[in-house]
Image 1 (tube, one colour):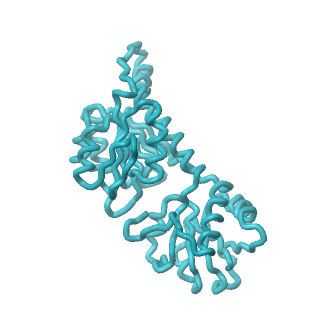
Image 2: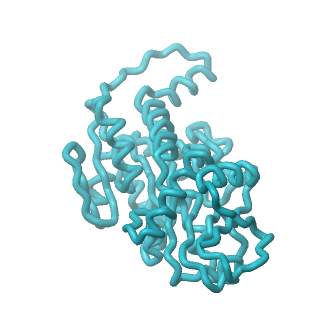
Image 3: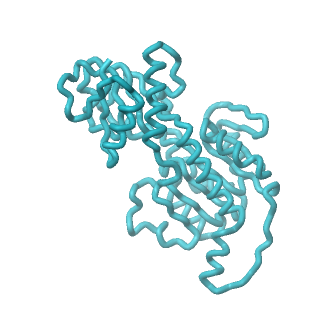
Amino acid sequence: MSLLLCAQVDNLGQWQSELATAFPGETIQVWPEVPDPAAVRIALVAKPPAGALASLPNLELICSLWAGVDRLLADPTLPRQIPLTRLIDPQLTASMVESVLLHVLTAHRQVPRYRLQQARAEWTQLDQPGAADRTIGILGFGELGRACAEALLPLGFRVLGWGRSARTHPQVECAHGATGLARVLARADILLCLLPNTNETRGLLDAARLATLPAGATVINVGRGAAIDDAALLAALDAGRIETAILDVFQTEPLPPGHRYWRHERVWVYPHVAAETDARSAARTVADTVRRFRTGARLPERVDSGRGY
């Protein structure tokens, strides 16, 4: 089976090298140099040009080299009948957990307030709740959500998890559906958003739902920017109902220079760096996916295009 690397990325050479190591003895064609499109059976992709995959008549599998697949699914030329997998890589998960711990502890230890005090040359020691007095609500309780919860629990935080479908965890109170979402939002002192970009999640955190958060809550978004209504979040921040927003993802990226988030004193902006894909680790993960596909094994990474992830 011929492999094709179809990626519009700055580190294409690194991907070529790491994939060559992960697939010893195999020839990997690199888009757009595809002498025989009919020979391609498996495409390894990151931001493939529109129409590129549809031009491969014998394609059997599409492997995303990234965890997010919303851009792929938005391409009307994507051959929907071909199985699509997303990257579920241990290194990517570890990086996300690191970022989540950083952001949650930043909020918990009131770092944003102390930074504002520093700007005013104000020496005030704030009362500091213990971790056991904080409830963390995680929206998107899939594999990443579970990993983040399991890193937060030993610190003593109460953790709630919410997802589209029912989940269970021995130490996390799990909820799903509209009623479950309302329960989680009402209790989340720190709200962690890990949601993918789907029809159901776009604009999920609107003015009405943000208003149900406890007074002084912090919103952390490391999922997808489309989950948050920007105007509603800014209004809640301006009114003081939400203490801080720590944002790593945005509806438009790069974040436009004129956006209010840049200059809002209680918004922390990160340029989509919570968990960057490591080519070496990801190449090994993708190679394992391909091996399982070739042997007919189950693919836990397979995307449900109807659900969007």
